[in-house]
Length: 114
Image (cartoon, rainbow, N blue to C red; front, top):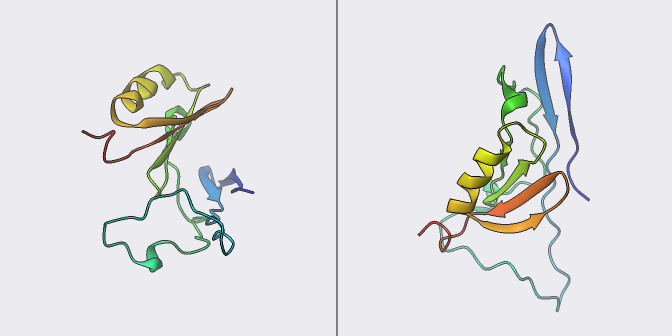
C-alpha cells in the first residue's frame, strides 16, 4: 500500500494531489520495530489521511528532488538534475533506509544529526 499522487492543471497553475495513508498498527503479539518517540507529539498529529489537494506547487517544483515526511523519512528522486547535491546533503544528516533504481530513502535520527 502507499499513497498516490499526480499533478493537475488548473488555470495555468499546477497543483499536486497527494494521498497519505498512516501505517497499520501491528497485530496483537506482533512486535513493532519502530522505537517509541520521546517528544511530545500528540495522536492528532498522525491522522489517518490528510487532504493536501489545495496545496499549490512552487513554480520550480520539478527541480526539487526531496520529499520530506512527518516520520523523518526523506525520499530523493535519482532522476533529478540536483540528485548529487541532495544525496551529499542527505548522507551528511541522515541514515540510508533503501536505495532503489529511481529513488533513495533516508531517515533522520538523533544519532545521524550528531
